[in-house]
Length: 217
Image 1 (cartoon, rainbow, N blue to C red):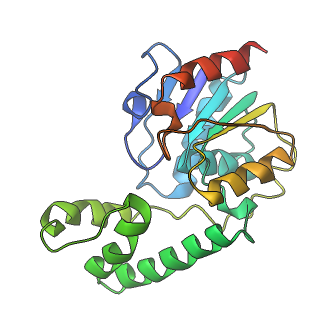
Image 2: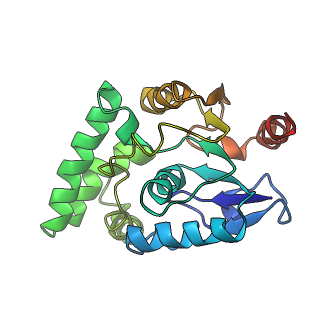
Image 3: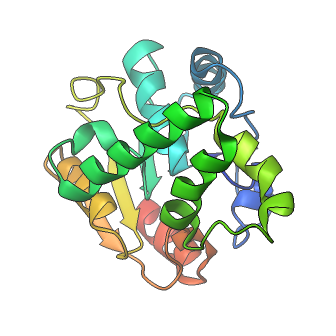
């Protein structure tokens, strides 16, 4: 059995478009819930399915780490797709720069300057300038993004020191995710690169084959 955990964009089965609806259990955890609640929901699902392989993307990978560190979750196996486990690569320059910009942006949002927040976040996270013409459409996305839990500061190094069988898949587009993958390899994970879709390797046709091949071993 597989349990799929989404990142910060699409939810449930929609987050995994190359997979059929019967490929496993597609969790649709509300990412605006307190992180403790999110982790408890994931840990509860794994209690009901102790033999499951967890397939987690982006923030979902961090959430798995939190559930393992603080909720006693023990997945049978892990597939981490571009996992946002920033705590594992704190000295990487790209990771440090990302955290610095996001810290500044969140300070602006907390002070009520949502547009200032988006001016920093949209170019870094979505590769486009935050313009006046786009602001009416962007504002609800900015408001939601400003409420999401940042994926660092959870002290996950010890919890992830001994991993179950783990595959890390990265998109080979950002040094920060490659550094995180390297840190997981040092803990016993396997790592493959699946380029062509940026932060969403699961959108590529080869993703399903790679997942099935790894699990068949």
